[in-house]
Image (cartoon, rainbow, N blue to C red; front, top):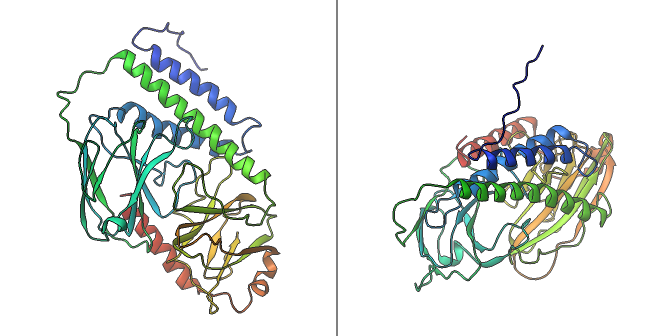
Length: 395
């Protein structure tokens, strides 16, 4: 027989924490309801991830006088459709402070620094300034130093407009080598003095912000996927789009797949006229990558084998039939395939075609133009990807 302790009245010292946990109880009931996909285990797991991400961000990274980079979207904590080729770092900043960022690229091919007003799921958000490593003449292996805010000048100084709250890095890794990833630190150049002890009132404010981030993130991204899916024909790529207030370099085309267990999608596309492009698979509801460490759920411009005619030919399916550019659904009946191309050379969107075929007919449907790999080559590919991710995320 289970024995339950009697309810303990709230004390002033615990009111904020108890309120936070009660609100999480209510949210947990909501996410297993009709509003969200019928995958309660994934929804609960995603809720725990969001708690881990945003408690850390709002409670422990809340002070712009003492910034430190907070890593989002690693192998265990994802949100908002992360790019499989990226490491994401965010640091809290204020427009009335001055900062220095120093680091070394190591094996990082590119980074994009965005000065932002908030996350995309926030009421107030948007990118106020952005710059890439290559625009500053910084490449793999290079050391770098930037300054932010104040009256600084020079090509590696970035002013901070009113309203910004974070400096966000997206590091890009194209070849997925098992090498040292980028390292960087941020410091505030205005000495704020000793760190004051945190008050109960401040903890209450920070926990309130953390909960609202968790709730807004889960509700926003679930609705985002549903609304975009409902606007489109299933199993077909829609025309390219850019995100308002997002990164100016970013373009996307969405394909929401809805497949029977014995069906697959064959994709043929022109190569985008862009510096970077990729195909990536996501879960409905959570907008997480399907399984970046366990399955091949992404391919970028360096990981894709082009056909002899210079076109992209890929297969989205639950089984591996030897197509070089296979993307593994993991048996998921539904999901999102995103075709993204960044830093486009012009406004021309690539032509993208897709068709549903039976798995048993895949071999014939792919045709002789589709590049192939052997079982041994596939095992080597999976092993190399896992080794890179272990280095990238130190896990």
